[in-house]
Length: 416
Image (cartoon, rainbow, N blue to C red; front, side):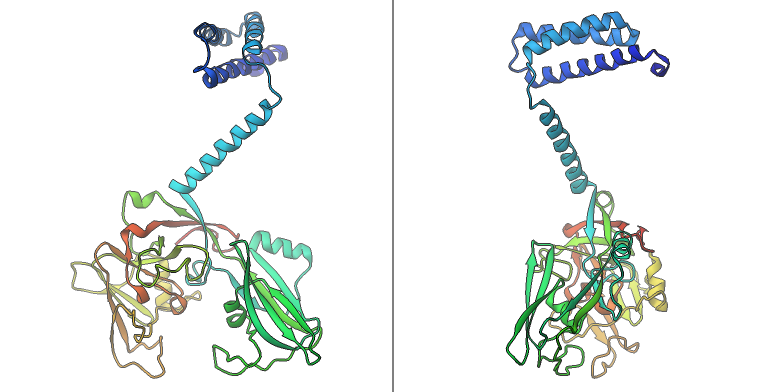
């Protein structure tokens, strides 16, 4: 405690003695199964002398003991050119084991891939823009702080789009190759680093003659040389921490954001990710517990708890009130088309034609099965959730969403 006030030489000898003492113990532990009984006794005797000398700060005694320890240690454990590498590898392995243990049992990072939980959590969202990308410094700042990237693709020869071909670079980076051909037969391939479905639905880029998914008009674009094929900004998915401890001691509560596996859920067991390929986990909000009756009557969500006969507006999270009021970009809860063969609920009221998911005169009711939870996305019109495939079995739970750690937007911090 008071080593700070000691002479520098004394502090140096104390530090060297502690290092030699620790090195002696470490080498003894590594090799004690192969050491002779005599050598083991000698090492233990040397180790036993250190604590008292260090406590008394006996410099002369420590110097003499260090000489004895070094002489015997170098004879028994000759230095190796690989000692430094070995220590570095040990540190790396221990750090890796600790990181994997924390990830497996305590906190797991998770990336939001889709917009089903907007505006609570943002997924990977490419948005077209008419503005040119900013300079490199601004782009670097926007990526590091806001998780935003800019992309601009220019044609060489132009022409008509012959087709879109998906691809991937490792399992994390998906892209779309756009094939074009002009009137002179010149062909080119332009790569856009997002999935084909997003190239069409988000950027509005379709093969020549294809029908638009939104309004079914036929695409007849012909690009000139130097035309902008794609100009968009991509918002990376929010990076969150998943608490894997809490649900070992208590079940999920209404209103909590939770993560669960899709395995063995009818309609989801063949999906590899939360509304997309690449993962086997979904992230939604828990709105109902086992035995609850859940009713959607746009824009409201009513819950009749198990064993009760009275329904009330859902509570337990600030997002519920915002959904009902449709404020802060919350869209309110919506209906799903009951013509879906896997629709697990019942519909009351006269459905309009064409189907209107926002119809306030129609309601849909669901019963939460035993040992299950009802999961719904905050972006109700664009969320594939329990309204389509039923409850989440208890054994599928992964953990509770607790913290958004990147990017540093208004959503950074504790999850609600």
